[in-house]
Image (cartoon, rainbow, N blue to C red; front, side, top):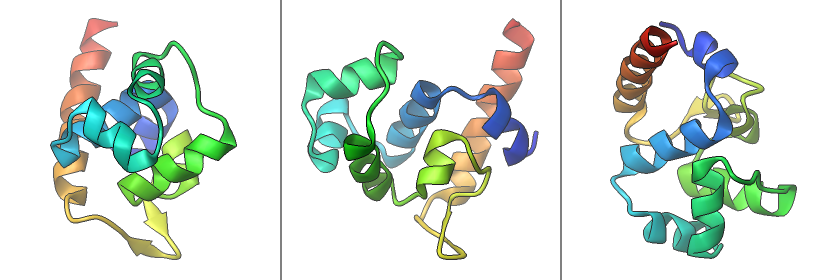
Length: 106
């Protein structure tokens, strides 16, 4: 499954969950890294709430991805034409596994 398909079928909360898992962080570590409260992060990751612009930017910065990638406007996690982060390939494998599982469940 290509990254493009992920941009279409993955919800924001699923994407941030997988990004957090990719980094091997707890919810507390991610919330601290993005400068938000743990409860805010939990609401975002569970899909109860979506962040505003003031929070999206620190989350994108924390994960080193573009806002377009984070919000599903792009299937590429590039910033200024460069792929960022050390674990892009691992992330893509996780996404592909999750996509296959999610598609079968529907």
